[in-house]
Amino acid sequence: MKYLIAIVMMLLLQTPALANSAYENLAFALRQQKITDDLRHKCQIPTTVSDEQLRTHFLDSTHDNSAVLSAVKALTENNQQRYQTFLSQVKCPG
Image 1: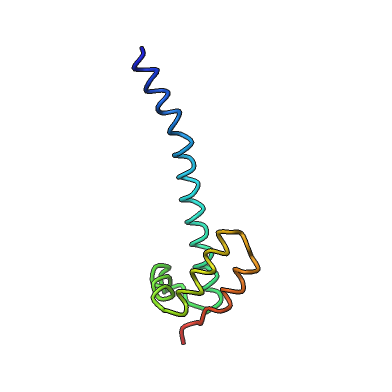
Image 2: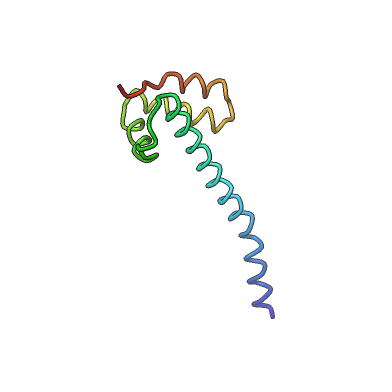
């Protein structure tokens, strides 16, 4: 019985950490998808280009990398004005 109580207590203590982790993972995925969708729309990138290819292109570019990472930070801080400013600095592939 005391082992059962110890196990239940251990599970209860881990649940908030797991929930926070799941929430953080979901929040990250949603931000990543928003930026991907916004870059696709801004640069009129066809859907035949995968999201992964799109992300790789923008993160491999030195100028775009800085602008994209700054946009990510602004989005994480829920600062839409800064997000839009940094997003507008990203150069579309030509």
